[in-house]
Length: 282
Ligand code: NAD
Image 1: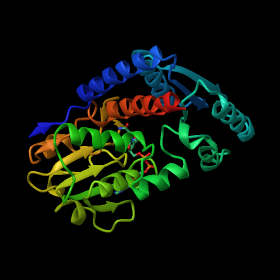
Image 2 (image 1 turned 90 degrees about the horizontal axis):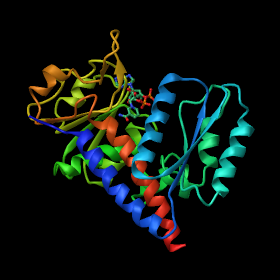
Image 3 (image 1 turned 90 degrees about the vertical axis):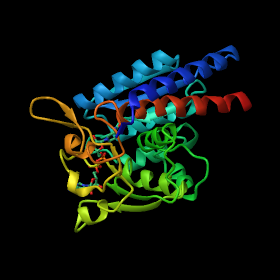
């Protein structure tokens, strides 16, 4: 069994981004990322702080617009519009989840698709489905990079994706399909989850449920990718896979933490640099 080391690969990718940023700066371009953070959700604040830290590391200019929980939708829209127009901003990220009174989809759709480094705008979602060049969501994109690093080609593999959200499972399914995998996607209403995971060459799970995938649910030699992030009662961070027992059976596995998590931020850096490169040709 081999561990897919997302931490190491994320450092490599960030180092590459840093070189790219240095080259862009020589041409007078400093990539810029704007983050909109609404409310006091502690997890969101932690994620945004991590994103800011990575920006600093690679030399990307970042600005965080912190807004109170009761902010109006129009005020957020105004900020998005301002960032759309700002030539120094290459990426706009709306930290999710947003408070209930906000129409998340409306705000995501207001972001300029060319600055949509999270890949949530309908234009980028559509392009991803069509297999066109697009900003793909950072977490599933990070999974694809991790597979590439370890020479795991999804082509022809039976892959079972567990979890079908817009930010994880669905784009994961499309990226895999574009890479010629045969994809089976499961969710909360799937009747018999084990019947789907048991025969898969690769199981990719992003649900948010501790211990959802157990050893009896994966075949010998399977590749297991754990996207889940959960906190145990004693404050430990764990994924959705029962790591101890599953790791004994599979050929490759991602740890939590240190697997897919760090890849997400690395992909955000990569997408922001990709967006800034457009300015060279403009
Ligand atoms: P979500 O709540 O939006 O979606 C969860 C999905 O899991 C849904 O499609 C739901 O139908 C499915 N599901 C729920 N219970 C299930 C069950 N018992 N069996 C099968 N499917 C089930 O969550 P999300 O935003 O997609 O996040 C999923 C997990 O991934 C969370 O743990 C989250 O913290 C983690 N996550 C990690 C990263 C990262 O960087 N590693 C990024 C985003 C999300």
